[in-house]
Image 1 (tube, rainbow, N blue to C red):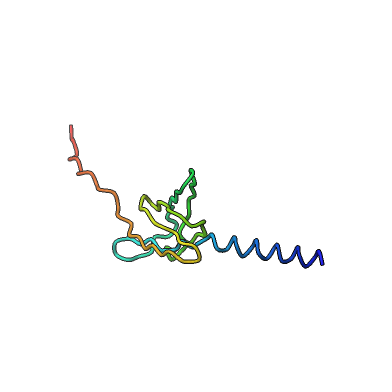
Image 2 (cartoon, rainbow, N blue to C red):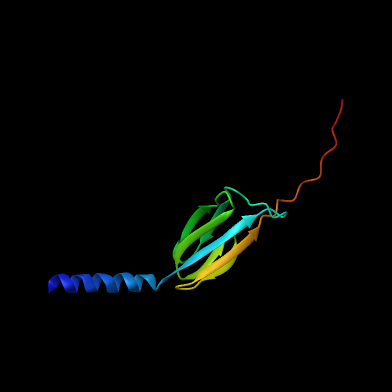
Length: 105
């Protein structure tokens, strides 16, 4: 009987933990649509939560997170429980500084 109660308690605990998480997934591509392999993406959330994720060879990333509000690459996103939040991002290269003319002496 005690084994049955322990198994039931474990099952209830696992199921309730599943209800509190969601999935964040997406891709990072260059402006032309080519996947950005190995991009580092910063994810921050409540109470100082911070993690970095790297994209795979197809520019994809995925995380399982507790539900709540996060900032992904500086963009606010909401992760809902038992749901997948999808975020496709286009990597915009930094502005180039104008070239200085060569100085000859």
